[in-house]
Image (tube, rainbow, N blue to C red; front, side, top):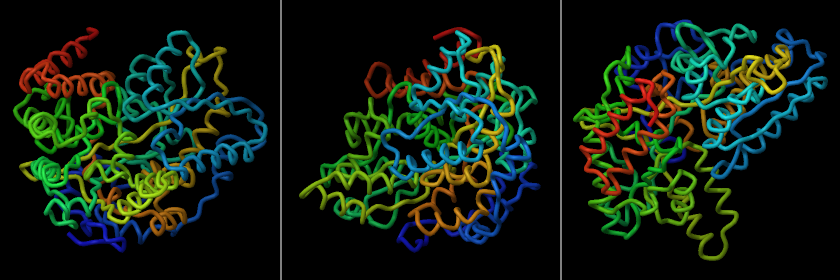
Length: 495
């Protein structure tokens, strides 16, 4: 494994096996995409960055005239605890630029936290008090489309092309052959480690764990040698952070909730209680219970709780976005005295690498992100949707420019043309470790595109982890219990 200009461990290029797997999962639409997946590598991404200019106002003006007078209400996941200040600035810039471009459209926006958005949205829909437009995390769209809450909406409706977006992301907007949303961004994460703690524990400071079994071993060795938690396990209930960090482990071991990691999943067979899935759960059990090498607070932690631990030199490894480097810089500004020196030492020793493989060489990461949706009028507060105003907002956010800018610090643009903008070239130069998470895209696995996915991922998977880690159930019992719960949910029964 070579290093980038920041000393970051990263593979140069993606293996042909990874490309073949990605093409199988993402589908033939990638052949008509504005970027060439078969050439995917950090070098290729750099070669296309800054090669094309876009005029967002002119492009969206073809969808909704710039002098249009109207009103649109909008809910979205905002920038909150754990996000870098840079993201907050881009949110401010986006809304200011939209209002400047469409001065006669009254935009009423409401930011919600990741964990509150789905629950509040569900409640609002029951009372026909929803917004006209909502930006939902990638696992939410099919749930609401299947229940009839969303209008059909495809990229062509806002002047774009379906081929401009990752096929894997478009799957999350598709229900029974119809499209109900447009992707804004696509997330893949990486393994982050503290090279100084690795060295103090007798590990190669520039070599991350290659497999998940290595993660367990490294975590134990770090705890024994330094007294510091080795791996930032996240197992909080009803929090998206948990499946985003556990599912790559589950898939790498060859497991899954269903067969979602296969090229052509049909979700007909529950796999959460397979032998492979149990091996993945056992690895988490071994770290938390047997070795006690992860934070005691893992049962209630989100990634935002791991960040200050990492910065304080009390955590050696975690899974997250490139934006965590910026988060560390922001948090360091608040530190004083010896804490500030410790923080700077951690930042200097911060490294990023590919998420580990499973025993059989499988590597996986959640293909995440968010999508823009327009509601049906009967579920909107006031019973009316201003279609031109709603489409103007969706067009603006999913444009090459803002698709890139709103993913600037920690994600990838949903619109593939975003990779060709001058802002992509700029961020490649300014954001440490972006190459690594971008390199993980071909290993991305979309969550199951079924209505029950939010409940499975946000409730059942964390429950399974909690049952095993707290000793309420054995690993076998916890996995079998999760399988029964998934079967009940799939049968239409409530937990």
